[in-house]
Amino acid sequence: MQIRANINERFNETELHVCKNTMDDEVKKILDELHAMYDPSLVCTDEVGNKCMVLPAEIITFYAEKQKVYALDNAKKYTLSRTLSDLEKELVTFGFVRISKSEIVNIRKIRSLDLGLTGTIRVIMKNGYETYSSRRNVAKLKELLQNVKSGKEGGMKA
Image (tube, one colour):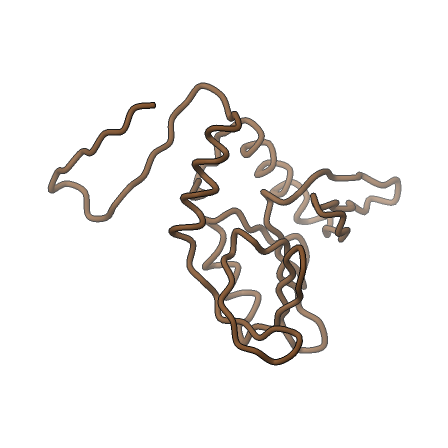
């Protein structure tokens, strides 16, 4: 592994690049650790009313239900005092994508897409959680998943 620093006045902000010919376990581990260090923490309320901080990388989905916004990780459900639109704008570069009017998912947590005969697309997450994507969001979702699979995450922070 090579580590280099390029200090130059042409850079206005810090950039981190991970470069390799394949997306292997080493690259995934490095990216996970970088996300843990640099992802913005979100202030949430857990199910018993305690305020807590969660990292977006740990969240599977953000969804709206009955005028409230929730976040779901592998173990807990949290309430946020944010709108889905705000979260979508803030977290798009961290691998979150809108799949319907009421839900944003972490594409790194998607296990598979099940294309049903009726035109519905079931999104199955790595922890077994299942949800559905609206048809108008399918093309964007497939493209982002293909980019993650090939290691070309485009505009996403890796």
